[in-house]
Image (cartoon, rainbow, N blue to C red; front, side, top):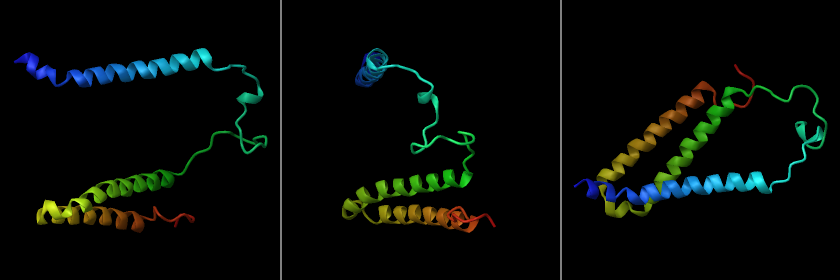
Length: 125
């Protein structure tokens, strides 16, 4: 009984080990084959060929992160929506209403973000 339970996971174990070996091999190959000649110029933050003036680290406003998260949410919506639309005829009315609820939840999220001003690129109000 135990061998039958773990028989299904042997492929997962092999794929995991192979994945770790490939990543370790790539990192090891990079360490051996990559040329390294550290200079002061290579340590300078590169900005369009001009010498950087001021700090190289700046704070990024949180709205950029929120905008990126919104993009990912609606990108994932598209990933769910296209296969659903292909199989729409076969899956029936219940799946239609589930997708309507899914899209409504996303629409309310977009409306909330819009009302909070996340999508505004101007100055804060």
